[in-house]
Length: 511
Image (cartoon, rainbow, N blue to C red; front, top):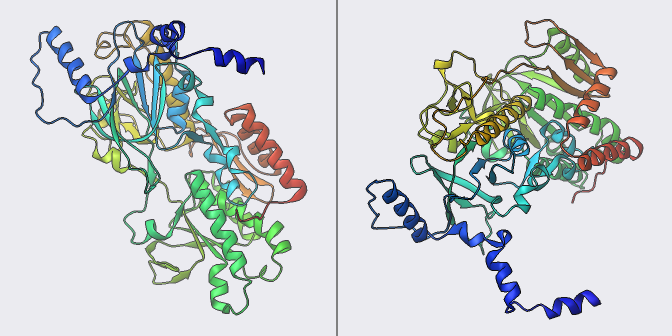
């Protein structure tokens, strides 16, 4: 109890503590945050000092902001997004040079290659979520580095600031509020959103497999349908509909989820839901060939194994999605109880709203150094960015390995700029940037269930290299992704989850 007595002796009114809170760098938050009026006065004073005319707006929004950095403070890097690109960038930034501020609607990074495994209980959800504060500890420790749970609503590149709005998950008791953040360097790493191709009913009825909450929704829906199908009095047609799982999209995500789902059905559902074990089925719908980026031999192997696992492959184009069925282009109705949509990604609504040059696919246009050429101190990486046509380079695929390596490259580039004294806003015009970014594909891997996987280590579909399938490939797939999990904490979680599932089977609790 001695520490309680010592704590009681410390009074907030004591001169020592008062001086500590006034003078210590650890508590100078008030010098970094300001109201809108204070912010405008700061900008006005700066403009006058530079000999510029400043016209004060008559109407000002009364909300707080993170003020521009001052002399003696570290330059500020503002990162929008917490995906593969943004988190790899934050991990590599030298925080002795920069303050790092992250704005994102989620406070963690999702290890997407293992997300499908969480839908059926092979892995726990927290095993694939890495908190941002673990990836870059400065965000929770340094006085000038922060994470804000918010979305960016507007980019004002002329004044080097972004407008943000907090995320409250729709809580009726807490209204979202707005604020501004001034930046020295801005990195757009806000990712992409699932493509619906304008098909009616997709957003309302399908579940996308991109976030942890999507995996949680899939798991709850799947287990709910299993339990409802055993209720007395349910019709035979309704039972078949409830137990029909439809996956749209034959890329790696769709195939991996289908494989995990077939494993779950064969090993767990047949044992624990014996009354309906013969009625549950999985259908994978793809407009073209599944796993089109893989070797032809590997694709044929995947088709054979999926058929063995009971996955029905259907080639067709979805024309409309209704609450309990979808309609194909040939007029066929496909009833479903669970619909998972995995047909690729496209530019988000925020990216489309930005008045910045775009690549042919609608992404933010960048040059070979990840810069947005039309504005100063703005960079873009990951799925939200693509090369401008003027660079002569093809747009890179929306893959985790592309985003991760772009983040690593840009972190090194910004560190070099910071050491050269070009970290401040509008100070990098004459800075030598060094070698441009060059991407080299390391290959692709995908699991197809039943302890089988595909490993394709070619640089391109037409190139030469190692391609293999089977149990050895599955072992390589698991080993590779276990080493790629960000922290030792989550590597331990993943390994334990795999071992527990192997010995005891998957957990089927609907929580």
